[in-house]
View 1 (cartoon, protein in one colour):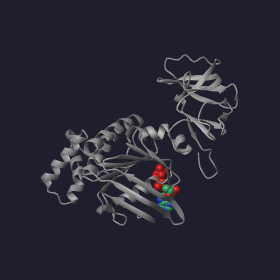
View 2 (tube, protein in one colour):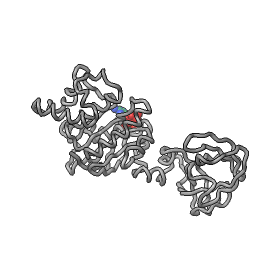
View 3 (cartoon, rainbow, N blue to C red):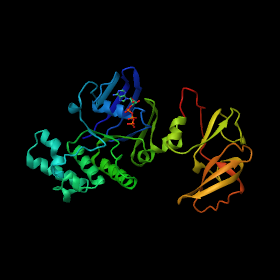
View 4 (cartoon, rainbow, N blue to C red):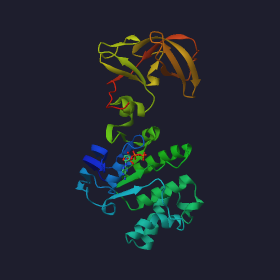
Length: 342
Ligand code: ATP
């Protein structure tokens, strides 16, 4: 019903192109892991290697402690759920969900009972006799999930499963997916390029870039203390202030660890209060976003720099006003080099 997954020094090449560079990743049994990164970073390649669709050029894949590196998909304790769901249009929902069980030789009464249980779990028991075209996109997605889980895989691999849904439904399905994963306890490995989706569902997020893991950690760790500039930028907006080793910056001497690099501050970590001063700045403009005001400030000492700041809902930002800004939760990362992408 659940298993851990160890990826040991996995490298994958397509002819001369290296899609994965010596990737190491340990996934605990029952964990919800999200592989996150831009198009082409290697997420699907890694998922396909876990599912047995590709044999890695080098390295090893262990599932539940067993070496699966050269084992095909059907002999692994994994199920893969693709974005297009591939439900059988002529079959009822019940038969769709029971399909994998039929292939395994389960008797009709037992598989109907199991399929009904699964449809109940995803809230579609009363629609068991319908055909897929009689459902909404979100309902079809739930049927696909019920079908994938009916065969009780140890590890469920999900490749952009919510990609075809509109934003509102996507957010709703994220909550459902997480709740179902908690209930069944199966290890989930989920691919997406949507940072908000990753934050909403993951126990740990694996940020990937150019076939490498940039950072692997809880949503809080990856968002608040990113290990690389790429990871920092991919997880959301970030102000970047160049720092010399002595704590010198274009804004003046800042009371942060005296370290050379880029001082990274999220917009919500700059405001009218904080743990260190960023000096005087002029408010250029402000837009109300509901939970906060999104503001652009120009520091008086560095007119070429723009700071994006989220002021709280109750603030009354007045464009043209000059105020002292403060920062908190500073993260200092190395300046990008030609070899590192930011
Ligand atoms: P997306 O979000 O667009 O699906 P991804 O992060 O899943 O992207 P992959 O599909 O894993 O990326 O591809 C990683 C890299 O490997 C890409 O540069 C891609 O062009 C390349 N690639 C993938 N499959 C093949 C293949 N069969 N032959 C050659 N190159 C491939």
